[in-house]
Length: 298
Figure 1 (cartoon, one colour):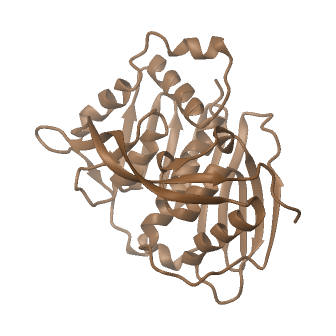
Figure 2: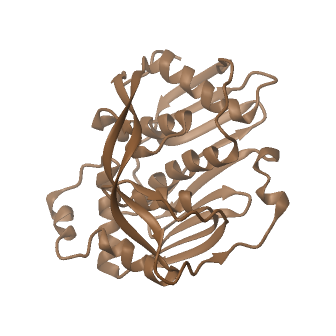
């Protein structure tokens, strides 16, 4: 099982969660990219993968992101809040676009919304559904987390370009979220620096078939390391690929047998004084009514 699936899994999580952290949702006027080129992403033929989004000045460049990734970034929702065809997880596109002069970073989501509607014909409606979830909560005795060193300049996201990039060499994946925040996955570990717990919960949900919601009430930024048994780590990587829509051969899926499955995350959280509790929650979802599989011409 190649690790590159995780590069895009964690990257998409970082984009959606990171953008949601940068600014609160506010009513905004409709804005559109001046020019946008959309191309199907090149097939992944090597374990050495670079994927990401870079927004700087008048230029936006996105590489190897799926339609679900773009919807998450545009509407600032989690993956489990998108109800639509399975193929959207595997339909990956590269986008290069010009941002109109005078627009702000926060308006990028609005421009993505316009792009999805005009080029992919996306229509949707919202519903509220009762979903089984896993709540990330503090265990008895309280959390045992290492708070990240304060760095006011790095944490002021509004003063720097968005530059979220994932790189994989086949054995490990590193996602640089900018400002000192990062994730790394490999060698039976998931390590995070300068991350908020809602971002950690959303990342962990990428390796699980249920949503994971942060209900700890903790608001800091933390340096976190989760360690897994080798078989459990491999199972998490396979499950992440399945959750993201990858079609895997039966012999790979059989490797999920005789592992602790979703419990592996709970075991890894124990030293941090955190745990997962099954609950139900009312969640607003986006139901995709229509989406073209290929965009209209550039």
